Image (cartoon, rainbow, N blue to C red; front, side, top):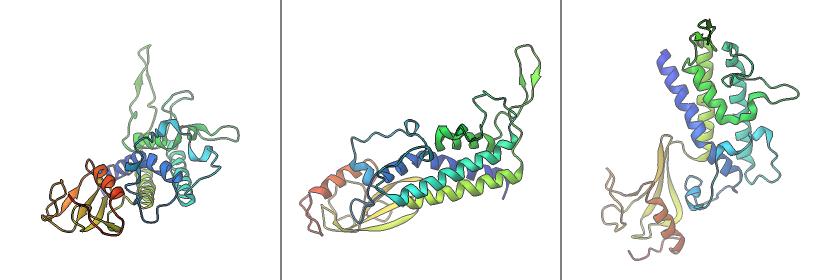
Length: 255
């Protein structure tokens, strides 16, 4: 694998972890969904939920008196640990002085170090090392140049970062059901025609739902390349509302 490809894949995986971490926190606080609503769509039914990753302490530093999804908690703790350990290994290239906000501080018996900032910040810090940011000497106020805050990341550490980031990304996406899948929605038919509904997910796209009936379905959404009615991200709340009011098990309602 080329250097540029390894950098691209690592950065993409780190950004996926950051962008889906709030969903993991919601999953920990939500009982696993057996049938309805699907895990991938459950958050669209929580219109009043607000969850900012930056406002939440790292999982390893928080108490969890009553997690509702122990599997999600265990996976989250493990991913967090792997990301933090990776940052520890990459910190061998840093020369930033203590107190420099760019510095990664190791944990100690009396302090969590930079782990206190959470996995979101750790991913940003690792991304900076992968992109070789701040690797040139910096001019001081007196005109002299100080050593660069970081060395260029050597190839073996870049590939270690790629391995860990890709593995953590895959586990997180599988837990949340956001890897590539086409899942029939059981016991729920299209409220407009009674057709079979299928949930489609991909790692880099928002979930969609399609109806098997085709153009004859009267749902007020567009057709995809397969001539299926498809609810995109913006239309999913309308579909979910219709499914809540429609009889369960396949009896369609009037358009």
